[in-house]
Length: 310
Image (cartoon, rainbow, N blue to C red; front, top):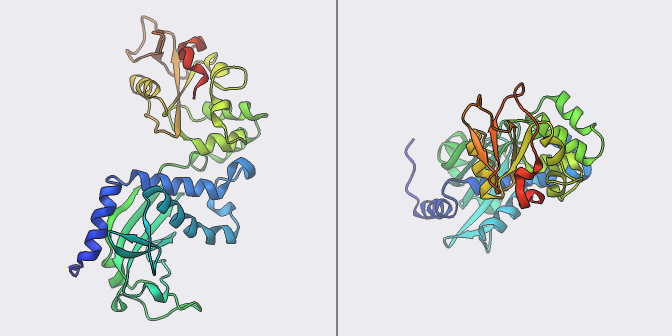
C-alpha cells in the first residue's frame, strides 16, 4: 500500500538516519542492553529464557533509556522523545506487531523496535499511530496494537538488520558448559577463545566467562591473562580497540573485531611452507596464519610493549 504523506514522520526518519546512517550504533545499544539485563558477570546468564518475567518487562524501558543516552534525544513534553521538534514515543517488542501503544500515543509518531537475540536480528521503524491503523481491542491499561494496515504503514529504517551476535548463545551447549566449568577466571577465558577460534567474541561473553567486568585483565599478557598460555598453543588473541590488532586480524584472514570485540586465530612463526598470510606485530615480529593441525607456539613478545593491553 502507498504510505500517506507525513512530513513530520519523514523529518524524524531523516534525523534518525543522520544520527546513525548504518544503524550500527543502534544495534550495539540493543546488544549492550541485552547484556546489561543478563548481567553475566554476576549471574553467568546469557539467554533470554534465563531472565525473570519482571526483567523481561523492564527491557523496553532500558532500551528507551539507552537509546536516549546514545543519541541525546531531547525529552518530549508528552511522549518519550522530541526528535526534529516532533513528539515520538519509543516502543519495543520481541516481535513485529507486538508493540503496546498507550492512549497518549494515538495519533502520534512512534519509533517501533524489535530485536531477537536468538536470530541476531533487529528492526527499527517509524509509524504514526492513527486511529484507523490500530486494532479495536485493548488491554486493561487501554493499550492497543497496530492493525495489519498499521504494520504496513511503518517506514522502516532497518528490517532484520544484523544484531551484534551473542557469542555464548551461538556456541554449542556443551562448549558453554566446558567454558564455565574450566576453573578460575583466566582458565575460563582461555577455554572460551580455544572454542571460538575464527569467530568474533563479544566483550560480554568474556566478562561472563571471567565473572569480572575488567575483561582486559583476563585477556592481556602476563600471568593473569590468556594471551601468554594461548601463545604457547599457537593461538593469538586480537582486540578491536586497537588499529594494529584489527590490521593483524585482516592480515591473518580473520574476522575484524569491532571496538568491544575480540577474535582468536591459529598461527605459527613464519615458515617456507606457509599460506602467505602474515601479521606484523608492533615490534616487527611476524606470525603466519595456520590451521588447528599446523599451528605452533610463538613468543608473547609478538604483542610487543602493548601486550599488556587488550
